[in-house]
Length: 334
Image 1: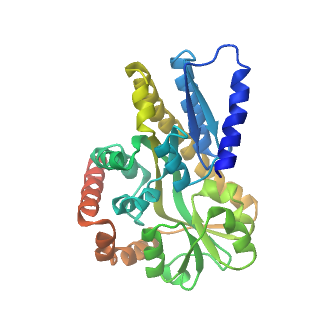
Image 2: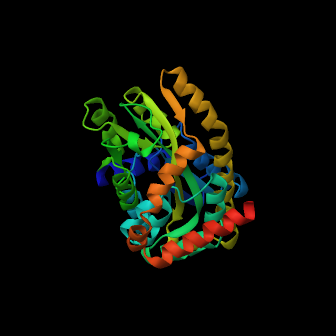
Image 3: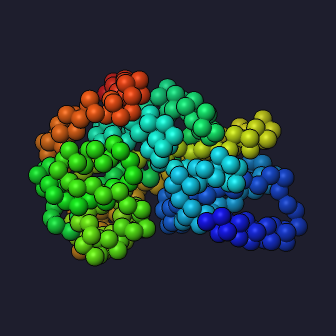
């Protein structure tokens, strides 16, 4: 990985050497999403805004599709200053502090609007403060989407339909605990291994946002896609603190504003894309089923029984703060 990282930066250096007017500052961004994904497009919007508003004084280099690594590895690169910016699932930060697993609890948010209000409010500010001791500066919030369930066995409408499913999950304790409670057999696995594992029957199912289901091509080996809407998957945009402090106050404002505007742009892409993806999957021969409010309530009821375990997992303060923030957001939106 170190060799691959170095080779990529060397290649970039040669390209920059041929540029007549080099930028004063270069910001290196790396992420795991493919170039077709709204995550990458959000970073492209960030690049466009920063380079335009700084008149080219800051140049943004983007390394997509896991070119330099994925997940925790990229967060560690940000800590070390080997890259400058990354957006990663909030739950991945639970490897440093369990409080970051709280927002990964299934059925925490009634809607995307509630989730966005929570992350852009006091709770998001509190999480940002908690990132400082681990060497990350929080810059804002992207998302990868709302997680849905796919499998090769049949449509899922109730927890009974999940019983016995060999299900790939992320290495997130909240996900593993929840799926176990619902009767599945969760199996943490790297995303790159999922397609072959499904193809070979090692697992029956996996869960991801619709955009990831398409880019990972899991719809090819999982006929059934059930819109369970079980987790809003927020991504935290983080920056190396020293790099941020090296910028002028004006540049800091431009970069911070660019993250927020790129996040709003990503939201517009996601909202337009999701219904189109449902139609696209059906056109590919997949069976896509929605759950009624009553069916969704069956899943939510099972998950509520796990409250004591979740409180213990993430800590009473983190859990309490999150629940208060959710209640406040729901009240303000109603």
